[in-house]
Image (cartoon, rainbow, N blue to C red; front, side, top):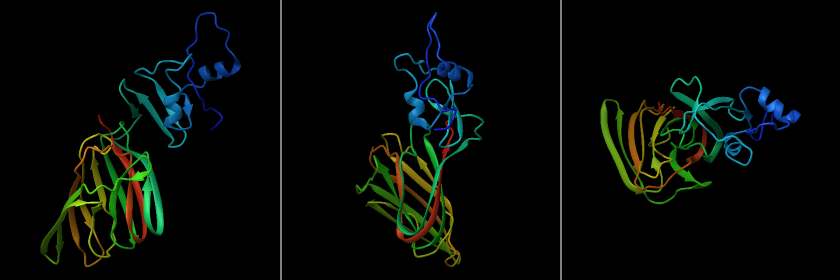
Length: 233
């Protein structure tokens, strides 16, 4: 943790003698935490403040300043789209992200930069493991040389988001992955270098499983994924 990081937000009582460390917490301005787990653990315990509307916090792992609106933590100065995490893989078969979905956001944007390997598949995750139940449905429309075709599948173990071996920069919107309801996925800008194919894709996870992450799956893939949350208000 950094020099200003704290582990609790004390709640002082009348005539209490304060230590130097406690005074440093008071004087540091916005409290600094290693991550959201440390932030959440700092409120509501014995001798700690109760989390309430108007509280601010800074997270070292994401360099994010947040405020509590009475129901959830929100980003300060957010433009509506908030960066959460990213990761890369070179000539691999699976790139996984855990704990990137939470109750903070209802909807998410996943941006891929895909430069090698078969077109990726997307699979949800929970508790550090892929959700492999056959509940993934998808439909797609493909345009190539002014010819339009379509394909779809139901009850699959992942979402298929492309055909062939072309590369591109697809963007996916995920709706309510963390909520215990069906999760939707869609994109409409997946243009591949393979014969200039344009694809439009929609799908859903047809079960009420709460997901906190996802995997990008393929063969000998070189891919970078960036995850953003859409501000709720």
